[in-house]
Length: 119
Image (cartoon, rainbow, N blue to C red; front, side, top):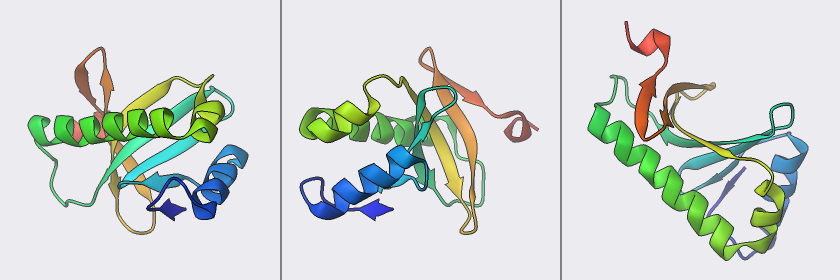
């Protein structure tokens, strides 16, 4: 569920739906999803490009996700409570309209491309 403000009822509903696992919370073009099995918070910076992004553009997009995550945990006590036990996984997600796929993620300050992207 897309939201544009964190201090309104729509954000509260989106957060509740995210916690239930029914839908991602999307804020600042960053998708947040809780994996109840692994207890990981997936933080995916969305892109819709048709070509593989450069290392630099992937890093900038992932940094936007990191900054958005920090903004939410700093400015929303409800968000912080919902995700405090779930370490974040920061990634770049290609949103192709009918779904999405992870292109790469950040691991130990390195961009790790998914195997289908390295071909």
